[in-house]
Length: 122
Image (tube, one colour):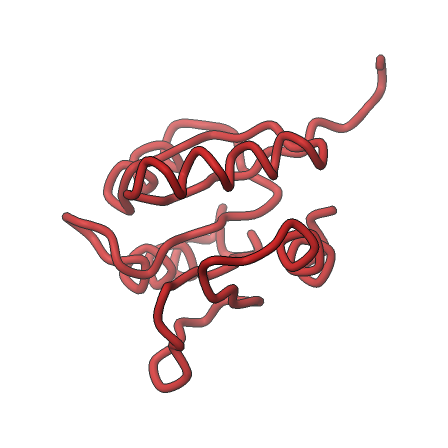
């Protein structure tokens, strides 16, 4: 596997069952997954860790919303080009953040793979 690009994804999800399911899907399609239980923790990880290939963020997490995380990422030069896939259990048609893709939970592995491909992370 020498020379293989490690594709890292940051997953931001506060629901443990949903987080484990999405993480398993990501690992199955070849990603290394960093996990944050909310957007505040995600922001801390982004500040000190390697830049991910993509960020999957639940829009409604405690402490800091996904909307706030997206806004911070977009204002940060080092991270501004990282593609973001927003996720929500609600049809977020009226107030979607500046994300490259949107997944309505629950979603299938195929839908997740489509979104990752759509944003150029796969």
